[in-house]
Amino acid sequence: MWTSKASIINWIHKPATLLAAFFMTLSQPGYAHDPIFGLGPHVLYKGGVELALHSHRAKQGDDKETEFSVEAVYGITGDWLAGIELPYVQEDAAGERITGMGDAALFTKYRFWRLDTFGAQESAAVALRLKPDTGADEFTTGTTDAIVGLTYGYESIKWYRWASARYRLNDKNDQGLERGNVTLLDFVAGWRPAPPSYLNADTVWLLELNGELIAKAKRNGASLSNTGGDQWFLSPGIFWTKRNFAIKAGLQIPVSHDLNGNQDKADYRTSLSVEWHL
Amino acid sequence: MLKLNTLMITLTLLYTRSLSAQAAGTQYDIRVDGLACPFCAYGIEKKFVKTDGVKSVDINIAKGLVIVKTGADKSFTDSQLREIINDAGFTMKSYTIPGNPE
View (spheres, rainbow over the protein chains, first blue to last red):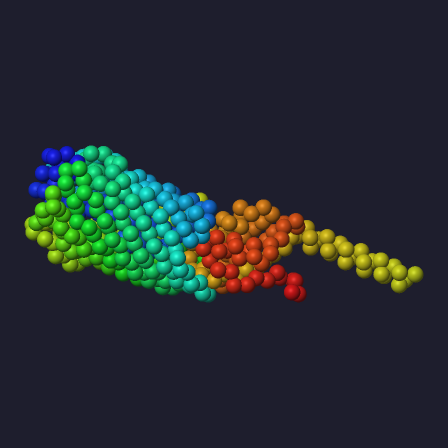
């Protein structure tokens, strides 16, 4: 929707679509016991393959957007992974539904610090995600954007905690449109109600606080008033696993917003993922 | 003559027991730090199962224990075990072989 002139005009007059589209391209694939909306330091074992299916949905004002994606991840070492995500997007806006491929994403994560103790693991990682301009005209941003992230996590048999910061650097597209850069902050706690056993099902409950601080977009250098701002979400979630199979689900509920100009705040966002480790 | 017979029987029993132990392979009880979730521990099972000669892998998360049983012709060194556990994303603290005085 952002590559043609008509789409840009539409985008300027319909800022509600901005954050929803941001959400789709900011969605963070999960790896094992990582937060659902935030970023965690988990990686994959050396030589391991993760296949995942994700579904993200966002409602903002009258607009609804749903993204389905397929993800493949490979464990290069016990501390370093790389992967690809291919999204398919469906948008309902102004009584119309459009669908198409979204921008693919390439990502990598390196766990640079790990402290293992009896029944607990503490670690930190850096992550990089690149989103080239590969999607359908209706959904591509027309840019190659990058997200860099730093994350810390503590995982024990009973409790979890994570903190992460990510920065999204947006490029300018061919029409001179430059979406505002984004800072993402996540603070997450997790609780396992029952002691885990290797071959039995395991459940972890999560509560995330997710912040999005978005700069104003610019067109040919001029700031667009109805863009950018801050939003904070409280996000309960669940992580259910059995051996090498996992289901993750979460709901983002907006608890605070300070958006520039005339913009609809996010009503809700959901995420549902299934993962296999092979 | 009686002493000789006793000695022969004893030696035969010892030899048979030795052969039986070899056929049963070796069990490694590995203490692993960082084990907290079953989903993540799958990497340990996967790494060992892909190793030739490994018969079974059992993981006890609450005890931080990984039990690996091998065939008669397979053995691990300390560094091999550490590498496998590390590649799975964890840290080996120590290991023992039940029945081995060392």
